Image (cartoon, rainbow, N blue to C red; front, side, top):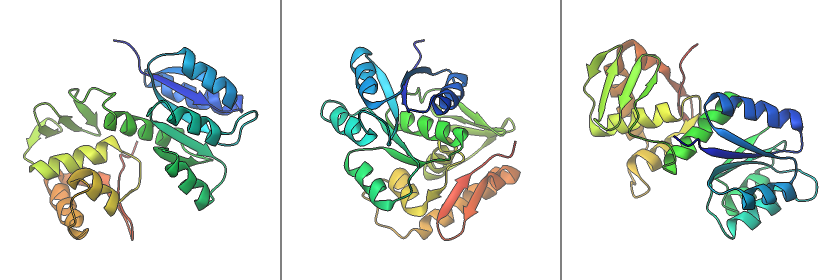
Amino acid sequence: MEKIKILVVDDESRMRKLVRDFLVRQNYEVLEAPDGEAALDVFYENKGIALIILDVMMPKMTGWEVCREIREISEVPIIMLTAKTDESDELQGFELGVDEYISKPFSPRILVARVEAILRRANKLDRSEAIEVGGIAIDQQAHMVTVDGERVELSYKEFELLTYFVENKGIALSREKILNHVWDFDYYGDARTIDTHVKKLRSKLGAKGEYIKTIWGMGYKFEVEA
C-alpha cells in the first residue's frame, strides 16, 4: 500500500526532524522544505501530497504567501505552525483556507493526532479499518464497538460521537465543534445535547468512560493514560 505523503515546511531543521520522526513512526512518507520557495518547488514536483504542515515565519516567502499560492490551484489540507498567538494571525489563516492552526511550542503527539483527524475528514485514511485505543475497538464498517473484547451496544449518535472523540484523541473539542461534526452544520439544538450523549456514552463504556475528560466551560477531550 502506497504511503500517504506529507510535506513539512520549516526553516528550523531541528523542528523539521522532530515532526518528521513522529510522522514516519506512523508510517507516513515525509517530504521536507526549508523555506517557502523550496516548499512550492517540492509541492509542484511531487504528485499526491495529502497534507502540508507549514511554518508561518520563513525566509524568501512566508507561510501566508505559500498558502495563498497553493490555494489558487489546490484544496490540499494545510496545518499552519507559528510562534505567535495573535488572534488576527489565526483569523488570517482561516480566511486563506488553513485547516488547522497550531502555536509553538506544541506536542508532536497532538500534531500527529490532528494530522490523522484532518486526513480522515479528507478521506485519505481508510475508514474501513478498525480503530483500537485503550481497550476500545471501533469497527466502522460493521458499526460495532467492543470494550476489552465485549460488545457494547451504542446508538447511532453515540457511535459517531465515540468515533469522533477517538479520531481526535488528545485534542480539546468545544461543544460547538462536536455539534458541527457529529450532528452536522444544520443542527441548531442546544449544546447540552452533547452533555446528555456523553453521560450515556460514559456509562456504556464502563471504566473506559473515564477516557472522556470534561474541560469545564468548553467541552471534552478523549485522553488515554499511558
